[in-house]
Image 1 (cartoon, rainbow, N blue to C red):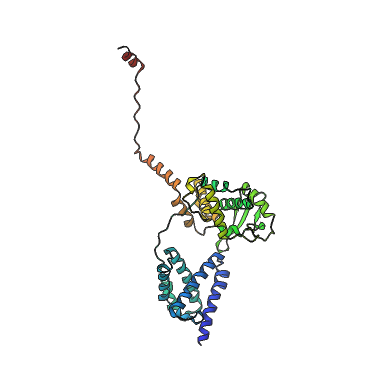
Image 2: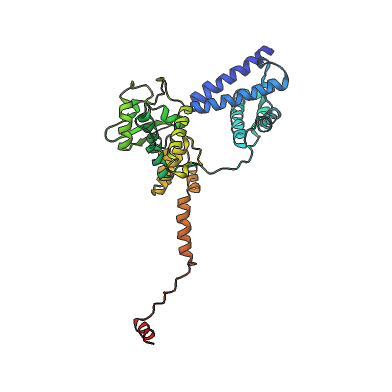
Length: 336
């Protein structure tokens, strides 16, 4: 009987990742890895707390008290921020929902886990690139180096499409259309497809790379010929930001991630007057509420609104006409 309980936990973990997350929900590989890491840490915490092996874990061990203790441990001992804590909780709650669908005998046990609320967290403004900074970083790429053309094509692609780095690294030649109408088909979160137009400059940078690999192979590759990784993209962006900072002082205090190009694309579209719903579809957001947060981070638009408000309020001091002496008066004075 005990053996059966152990097998139930393993079977439900496997069905959670394969049947639910991958097949039913269509979660991205990034989401699957995030949920995998959260559950792995949670199970290892249970093992250490109970002084036993992973093989001895049972469904009865998945309790709300254990989840709360794990979340506290994540913050106090592992140094996780509240946002990371909430991500861990989201993964565990999703797993608890899966358990509830397949094991109603423990409905009360799983329901108590689902009742755990996330911790309030300070939502920080998104870091984004102003257009002049984006241009400087792209211009800083040295095309004489071995991978200069690849780096420039990648940076242009990220800024042009606002693609997530995982979407950009998955691009294959068959998903590109390099003649008119120039466009790319992106596969985003939840296996949702969208089509983004491409600048002529982006197409010119991508063309040599797209013709150098097979139709089903990723076009962005590292020095060993393997597909480029997220860490590889972060490294090359940091390298070119450091180079661009020599001429653009604003970049010297910036730590930019690949996502900053996505934010920069959104802000540039906003500044160009593009409607939020169009930007939502362009970036592949599930809700316009996600897109609207760029309004709160855009300092230029805030300054424009403030200037318009100031003028409308009528509080600006009206300058008095400057007194200028009459030529006749000067003539009179000079005649004294």
